[in-house]
Image 1: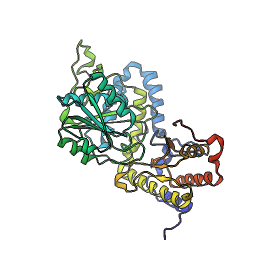
Image 2: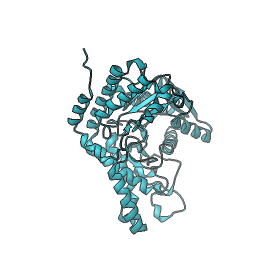
Image 3: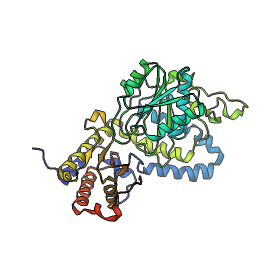
Image 4: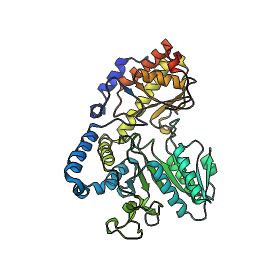
Length: 409
């Protein structure tokens, strides 16, 4: 018989947790149980201090000299090198720049140019919308490119496909794709592959292996803050051929010579376009140090244990609610959030938020609970499930203010 867990059991897990010392290194709003770090990570105190220093000292006192003296001009490379350590890349294969959407556009365009004669971008039918939108926008601009959506990616990779663009973790179900297998399948048909790591980098160890390109954001599991800079990975074997269409001055071989015509910088720097957002990049730079210090293997182990605990508590204490777990239970094929389906998913999400339990909702009926181990204690998992059980028991979800709505939060 499976043991019925108690809050004391969860407290014992916290007492033995080697990552527990990281909890106070983030600003944790009093009374909030935060399960949305998969959408926006918590604020690291170190990032707050660094941004204040950049404001007051580097900008306030150093002014223009800080581009060199404070190393602002090297931030994209420095931050990129840190991200590279999290995704199994070389330091000079990753650069922090722009947004995920813009980097998708740049790398998809580069992939098409590297595969002349092939005019198809293949992606998942259920991929994150911006991944599809950017591919469609590029196709409309070029005029002779097809964006093909497929349920079975392996079967859909044909010899006219130039680039296969996939998300490593499904943003709804949290299903984890087999990166090595799908990369090999694309290459077997002569296609390039681009991975979106937005829901995996910083949540689990990533091994890009033979992947050609990758993108990802800085504001979810990397804790870089709202709208934090994104990043682009280009495998070193493509550096001498890689050409991207947004040829801004920071991607020039000699930006401060102000030449009339563009010459791409050597290596990954040619993925840059405009001037980096120094304050945002500074916050991300500081936040990444916590992940590197903690280590992705330890982070992943705790996330898996916390997800298992949450699912077990829901089954033991909330079985009557009828929540359907969409996320695979197998550790090897899931990301770092649990997705539950319920006909009153929106109402339950709003009821939880009213009690300061913060998951998120994806239309039409999915509640997502994110697990970010550096900012989440085991007892908080118990407390969140207790609130869920109480909401259902007291039927707060039936109140008019929690009525089902079509809006997406």
